[in-house]
Image 1 (tube, rainbow, N blue to C red):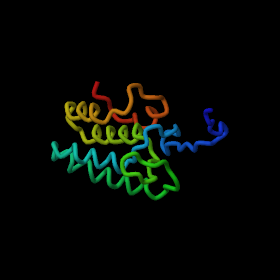
Image 2 (image 1 turned 30 degrees about the vertical axis):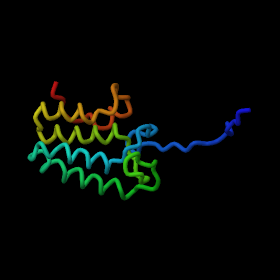
Image 3 (image 1 turned 180 degrees about the vertical axis):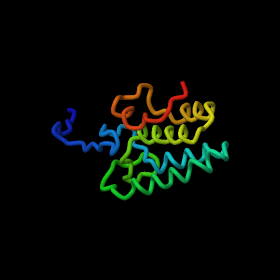
Length: 132
């Protein structure tokens, strides 16, 4: 005989502080920023300009953090912003810095967490010029 789990059990879901969507890929911004820093070592000028902006942003978003989902990488409960919104923010910063199109294309290849950008994500950071 199979045991059934309680069908009324409640699974807590955490929503992104930026777009309000459920965080389905719980990687915290700190861990993503570490990966971006490792990637940017190939581009010294980009790293020099980008990382201080990311560090300042991370300090700003840590303050209001009350509770978030657990990060898959570091296991800390700080995935309050979905990877889609955070990498989109980074993309916006790269564009504002006037980063080379090839470097931006590589960033998108390495840090693309979705195939189709849902409207809530696209609406928040798409104020930067497009390279199309």
